[in-house]
Length: 164
Image 1 (cartoon, rainbow, N blue to C red):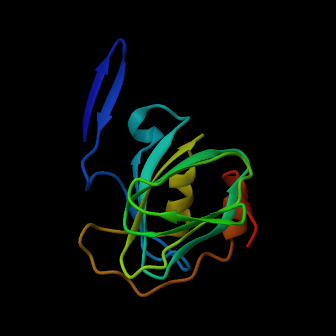
Image 2 (image 1 turned 45 degrees about the horizontal axis):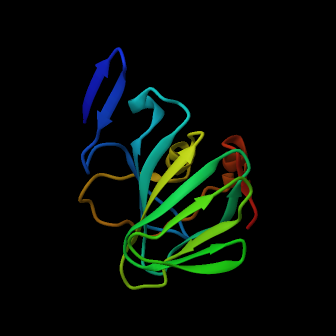
């Protein structure tokens, strides 16, 4: 990680292996990698990272009542179901998800689907850490594991709405 501080601003450049990474529970499987988060940037209103969704996995339908999110397909193929409408995801697909917009990401391919996410205010990185398990670069994929039983309380504490 490289940082620059000056009277006119701050810059942070992170390399692919920089930042915490967390294995994610079913149904997504895969992992989330937090990159530009408040503890690194000093800017508490925004965070950014990647989520790798395993083949056959999905990010279950949910919405954010206090956050807006940008989702960009970085690698792989799948679909996003937004307010009940299915949209194909290929590298370069992008979505703006405003408050209370129901969305689900489905990897119906046989390869990893990698999504870049940007969210404001920050907090998604805390959710991934709360429900996941620490991941080290290059370690083997663990056996799928269940979400925490208190995931609804975790979501509510971070401004997420649980619907399924």
